[in-house]
Image (cartoon, rainbow, N blue to C red; front, side, top):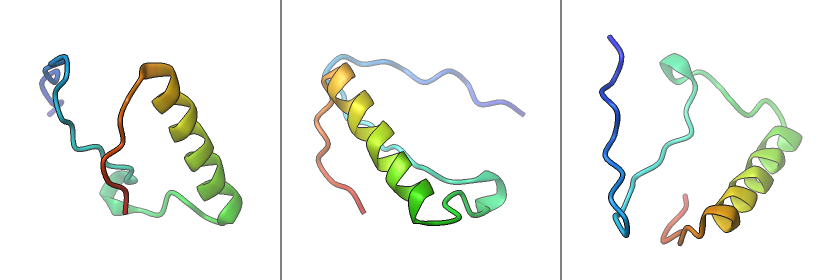
Length: 55
């Protein structure tokens, strides 16, 4: 069953996950992981997002 659309609250806090289906591996090597970090930073800047924590 699909999830309901999430609320978009200006100034709200969001918990974002990067996870494969059934928790499968999404980063197969360092290049995959670095590409993810580059995309994350590009969209963070584009959308004016403040990143409070990252693990």
